[in-house]
Image (cartoon, rainbow, N blue to C red; front, side, top):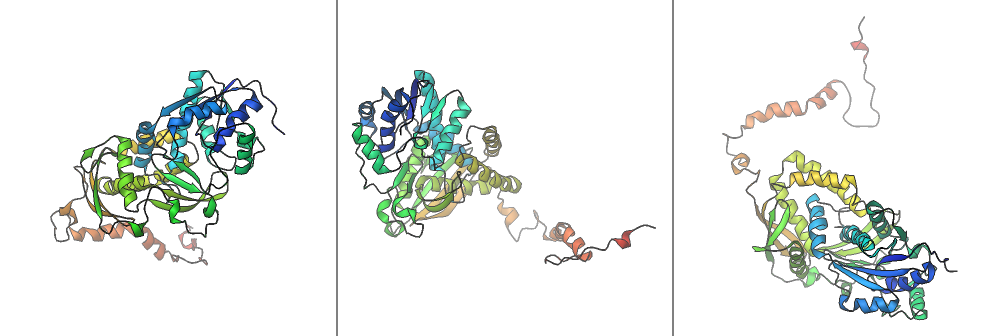
Length: 423
């Protein structure tokens, strides 16, 4: 049974990719909500779609118009680079490629809704995944007056086959077939793979699945060196050539992919409570994260560097959970940016068969002093001073031992305080 028409929705902006799901959503919205549908496509560097033929496809599906925004540079400079400077990685492996693009797409959906006078937005995310949260929290944060429609939580379409049948009945032009294997998301930063063979995490991914990177076994037998220059935490040049933020990523994707860099296989914890198995290709991002952390190790003091590692984990959680447009993320950005001034310099890396190997780093703000670190140099570091430091540093351990308490063990005796009682 189809949902009743909801005439209060007059015009809806649909996040549109031209794939099977969003193509079917266009007539479904018109049929069930009786509204005009404006399709919005965000160009975030995806490689698996032909944007040139998208407008006619949207119109043939029943949309009144298609609006396309090129967001590659904005994605790189305003979303990816702040995340990079924070060092955010979800569950030690996922570089948040899909996660970081969703708030940007949703932000522009809201902008388009204002532009065309729409009173609702819609998306094709399923009710089992994280993207529904990311889209909707962003809309709520930027314009809570807009209604949000999530067809996957309403309609009776439950499979790819159902969607293909619905498209055929409504004369929707789609090229999808039931033989499609993997669910993919692609943008400037990464390519993700889910479903198919990956639904069983015991299965090793087949080599034909990968599209951005060659296997380490098939990578060149000779290493390649790459130099990345940073200014206040932002990568600005590759091998001496100044590049735009998006071009930096594109260049390193090509270099890293050719040498088997950036593959990650992860069973991750989704926000909605279930685990999922995904394989990610992020060659350029993996190189940039390594280089940025390598430079930070040289220029940040110990306390700042260690505290920032905790911030990185929180930043990753916020990004993954769709909480980009929140006061906390802005506050974390303020902290991160305050640390990035000295993250200026050049890092040289050697790439070889899936491995990233440090080959040099330099910075005018380096805290590394060869004269301090040299074992034989006594005029800047007197080794005899270490004795007093160790005595003070271990004072609490000494007091504990003197008090008769074991350092470890389950049966810890209670201290006898009676000897300290006053008459």
